[in-house]
Structure formats: structure tokens, C-alpha cells
Image 1 (cartoon, rainbow, N blue to C red):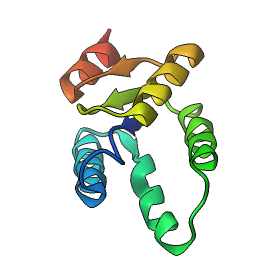
Image 2: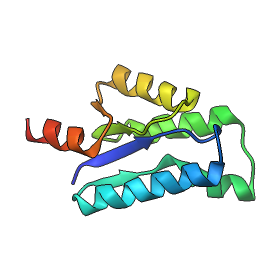
Image 3: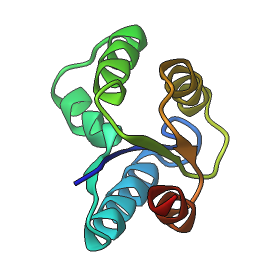
Length: 107
């Protein structure tokens, strides 16, 4: 089962709506037989105890390094762009849709 990292906006717009988008995509990925890693789950950790942004990003990069691909959802996001840059540095494929993910998996 491939592990797919979901990268998307968090701070731009409504945070809970952004978290919900990742949760919905995680379910779609599960429906297609992928394991989904949705880093905006840290939203719930942040509710209990705040941490500096750099700590969240460091954790996200550690999680990303274990993934088979990064799925970038639309929307402006400095954090998601940094995650894409890190994925590229690590040689992790970057896709922008589940269809694209399925195509590269078959290739």
C-alpha cells in the first residue's frame, strides 16, 4: 500500500475547512487503496498546545520523507510549497490529482 502525503493550504482561509479538505481527500485515497498521511491533523494537536511553526514543518518533513508520493491540493500556501520543494529534493513524485497518481503508479 503506497503512502501518500497530502499537501494543501492551512493558514489561508478557514483553518477548519482546510483540515476538512485533507480529511475528505484522505478518504478518497483510502477508497483507491492508498494509505493517506494528512499533516493537517496537527491542527488538533495545536488546539491542546501551541508550537512554533518551524517545529510543525520539521515534523512534516520527517513524515514526508517516508512517503511514496505527495498529492498537492489547490490553493495558495507557503507551507505546502515548501513541502513540494522538500519532496522534489528527496525525489518523491509530486502529483496534483488522484488520476495523476494512478497514472504514475501504473507507469
